[in-house]
Image 1 (cartoon, rainbow, N blue to C red):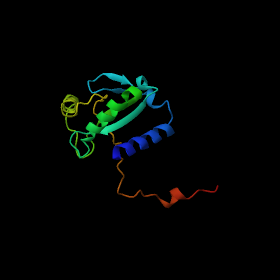
Image 2: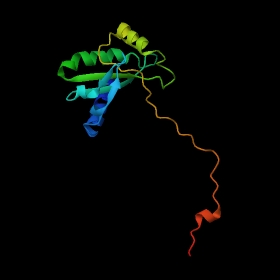
Image 3: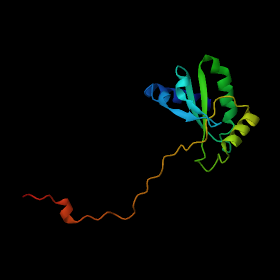
Image 4: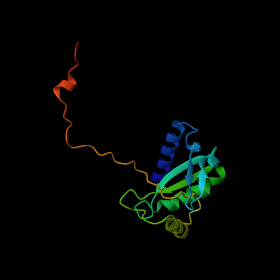
Length: 140
């Protein structure tokens, strides 16, 4: 049920987004080959952040079942492994591919490991000092 609600939510976001933006991207698949997302135009994409050492790892089984059931009707599940959250995807692309294939028989497209978090902008803890003059406009 949780997976279904996630799929519905992601579909709603996809419909609200500009329809051509994702198709302009080219990503790298798990084997290191460029993959233009334009090849999925006209299909329903379910883009998923995955990891092989987290509490949600069993979702591979559900994602594969979903993909197997609906791929002939236009559904494409695309997995993007990431190691951003408590280092739950430490392996290389080859190790990730072997794990997914061996343990969950994954056949949906898997992309190379990415970072899903934006860089943290560091803020200064020292307040900026401005002279009083800098806040006063001259009236000449």
